[in-house]
View 1: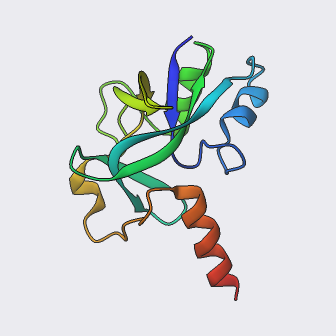
View 2: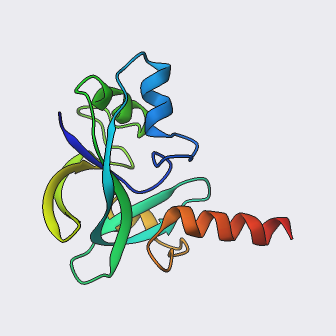
Length: 139
């Protein structure tokens, strides 16, 4: 089973929850391995974040899952990653840190050029940021 690092709407409880995507497609549920980090910067695209990988940046927070092979094409579809086409997100393998251990994971970053003018997500955690932002907007 491949390992996937999810940092935005694919996280549990978010709009594209990885577990819900598996259920919807009749695929065995992924296994959560834990919360992990990668050096990078998160940006607010409005309804979802984008991760720019940056070894000089602080940690971006996400979760690592072991996923069935059948779920990877579903994730590519959610992230609108299509072979041979230039898209916002790309599917790449990178090393993330899980409990201090390096783990190779599939993840979906964006290019630096894609985030020009967008707000940076301080703290590197989309879920915490989104909840705070949505609470402030409701007040």
